[in-house]
Amino acid sequence: MHGIIDSASPYVIEDIEDFLQNGEAKELKNGGIIYKDKLCIILGSEIETSEITEERKNR
Image 1: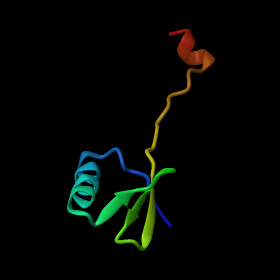
Image 2 (image 1 turned 30 degrees about the vertical axis):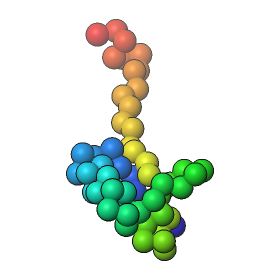
Image 3 (image 1 turned 180 degrees about the vertical axis):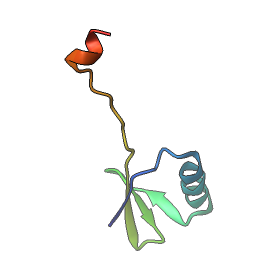
């Protein structure tokens, strides 16, 4: 099992779509992708947040 954190990147999306279209990878029913019938890939994305502090509220 392997996780890909930048799966929302256009380049990663393109690669994943290519793998799915050419049969190298298949979507799993309960989530994830199986690559070459050997590697389970779990897709993820980093979400950045900005906390609002009392100091920032008073600006």
